[in-house]
Image 1 (cartoon, rainbow, N blue to C red):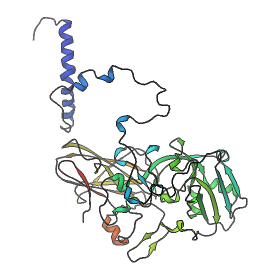
Image 2 (image 1 turned 60 degrees about the horizontal axis):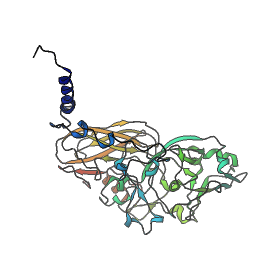
Image 3 (image 1 turned 90 degrees about the vertical axis):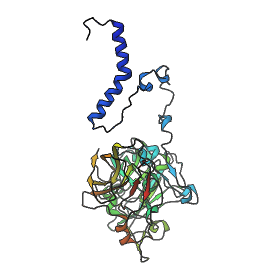
Length: 430
């Protein structure tokens, strides 16, 4: 080493050399610390060592987007439908892009839609909610009336009973957006339904409710009074802002943990009765057809379920071998998720996943499992257990009990096959 002092020019040159080469080396050191789990380039990356176009120009001001929208580089993150599922989009469904999301809250613009008569467009000033039937005082509420009642904030998942329905007879749709995307999870703000019923006064023989929507289908469902008095909400906001029109604006029913068709949107009327309604076709269409031709009725609760969202067919492994983060979602209509196990070999061996973020009753739970992938074929599965000991079954175990004729309430374990090149596919294993 020279004893001569280094001049300022030399120091600046050394700094530049460090910025162009040393950062990559630091990345290599970090990778080595992680057990060589990530790759580092031996050559400088001009995207970090050189000034880029976006470093040199001013961006849009605060008035460019009065209502914020995602980055243009996230334009692919959208709800998608399967055109052949239904005859017409006004009575159809689209799917939440689960593989593009993280955490447990679903952005409002990505919550799946399910309609029976298209989206009703209703001015809140014109909307009314009537409660009548076996009550002491029939009442009609305006939206302003509802706003005067005490309100609550609750985070719940909403899952269509037909979620994963196409998978009953085998692997059908290649992507968790399509196999499991009829679920979302948001914070609802609303009035406990029991307060509105108490305001009207319930007759001694009151036992059932018939909520009705204001859309063109006049959607109705029978709901037992015990559930209504327990945890149902009449909600007008989701994730802090007003309900989206496709989610029932200006007001909808929230029935935590129960199948989504009971969460009547554009709620306009609640009739109180002493028995379930059988005269309307809608109240009995969501039944589980068994192998012997009989049907299970009143199977409202959505059972314990999970799915790996990454890797999955729409989110293959792109980074090659090395450190891999697996993630997914688990939920139960009975309560909280207690545990999620992961298998990377088709169920022969199981490992405990890490549940991260809030653990709330009847809400989505986010889980992670980190491992080093050696490039061999994987058969990925997740298996959830809730706080009451309910365990997610295999598809074959479910079929052994219910047969293959059902469409609804498929909570069987999903399998993704990862090939050596990272491509991932929906498969069935025995």
